Length: 66
Ligand SMILES: [Zn+2]
Image (cartoon, rainbow, N blue to C red; front, side, top):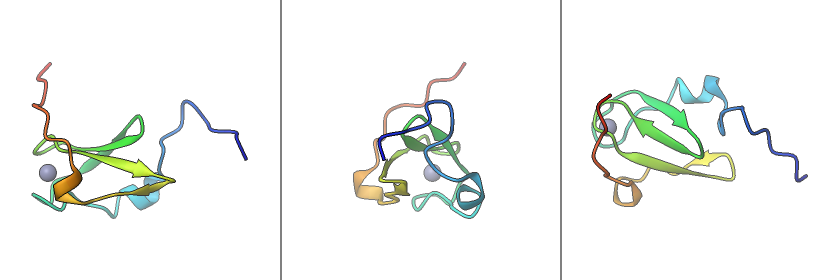
């Protein structure tokens, strides 16, 4: 059970569509092994395919504007 797709999201996009940022209810998108809120920039870790949508555990690094 070691096969991990490298170019697929760490979470099913159908599940992702039903999730929202617990801090601001913004849209989340998968980025590597994290879910990133496009509204407030918080990053939530995905553990074993389950997103840990816990505000206290989110990384609040500044959002980089391109
Ligand atoms: Zn947010």
